[in-house]
Each structure stands twice: as structure tokens, then as C-alpha cells.
Image: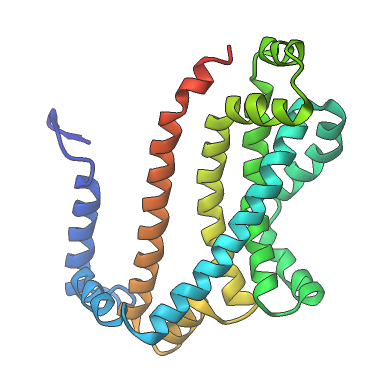
Length: 251
């Protein structure tokens, strides 16, 4: 970020918006927007409470469960779609359809099929994350130089060796990019699941605080989610840069 030709630290934008938030909160423009300082004070009060710790653990279980299935299904399927035309033509229309579909509309169907518990929330989280992982993995495989595959075949590599040592590693930059976006979508999916399917985890705290108009508590939970999502997203972005080497060796 530059102002009048001077380069400012990367966090300057967040600090400026935080100051604007603090000023508007103290002006009492709306009860919905308390001062940012009071939100941090509230967060310091509730972060070690039983309700917060329980909500965090319940949300983490559902989130990482959904992300796990999105990875173990999405990455292999994306690789198969990228390397096999028949598999690609079979699955690509469905992947594109679910990628662009309003997945929230499927929640009532999942509730009927799988009940109102953790299983349904995990499935919703998986559905939010998996499609972009599949598409990014497929795109990475499509860019692999065919000579790499021919070389593996000439040395007698079996399908599993080619799958792991050629396709996976060569497509790794795109895979990590897909995981990064899928992670952000999974955060959305787990909160929607906890709000619509079973009022548990952070969903229960959102419901409790909003119904009682405890806006400082409400925003404290949102800031925790944003901070976690932003931190892991940036870590994945740094990891993706480390694997740019593989992208340069595909051409």
C-alpha cells in the first residue's frame, strides 16, 4: 500500500479500517456496530469460557472432518479427471453444476437423508470445499508436460507410482491453491451447517448473542473466525510459493 509515494506496511489497511470502525462505534451510529476496542475486551472475557471452548471444539471437528473428505475425495478425482478423458467427461458437468449451484438449498435435503447431527454438518462442509479442489487439481494435471508421463512409462512406473510421483507433485501448486480457496469455502459451509442443521458450535453462539442483542459478543466470534481463516489462508499461500518450482518444471 502506497500513500503519496511512500510504501506502508501490509497491515496498514487493516489498522486504518480498524480506526474507522472504532470511531463509528464511539459515535453510536448503530447498536449493531459497537466500538472495536469493546469487541476485543469482550473476546478477552469469553475466550476461556466453557461455552466458547466447547463451540470452538465442535466447530473444529466438523470443519476438519469436512475438509478431510474434500481432500481425500477431491484430489484423486481431480487427478483422474485431468489424466483420463472419459472420467473427465463423466464428472466435469456435475462438478461445474455444483460449483455454481447455491449449495445452501441442499441443506434441507441433507437433513432428511442424514439427520440433524454432526454427519450432516460435515457433509455440508465437504460440499462447500470439494468442487474447487477438484477443478484446481484437474487444471494442474492438464498442464503437465506429456514427456514426464512418457518418461515414467519408459522406466516401468506402475499406475500408483505415476499417480503419486508424477501427477500429484507436478500439479501440487494448483492443488494447494484449490485447498486454500476450499478452506475458505469450508469455513462458510461449517457455519451454515451449524446454523441451519443443528444449532451447535459457533452457530449456537451466533444464535444466542444475536437473539439477545449482544453485539460485542457477536462480533467477537466473527473476528475469531475471520482471523483463523485469514491466518491459515496466508500460510497456504506461502506454502504455494514454495512449490512454484514444480510448476516451472512442467513446461
